[in-house]
View 1: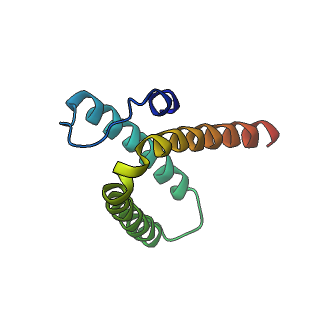
View 2: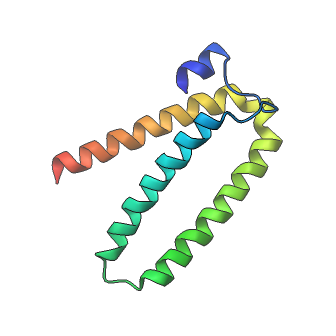
View 3: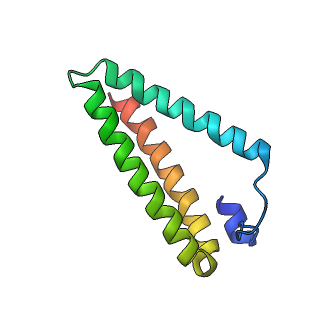
Length: 102
């Protein structure tokens, strides 16, 4: 993501969605959701309420992101691509550090 943003290859919209990319994204998202589901199963919380809360928040944030992306995307596409890459790296580093210190 960072390299694409710097080199100016960030998607600018209007392109057809590639089926392979969509499938990989769907699988990755499903694995993430399954991991969260397993975690919730071991917590002393009502699973249906938690699932409803997670689903509601996810819907609102995803819808907001799509609307903001359509509005701001043409102006911020390269910077957003770079920022997204930096945030993902930071999240990964934080997870690794937390597991190493735990």
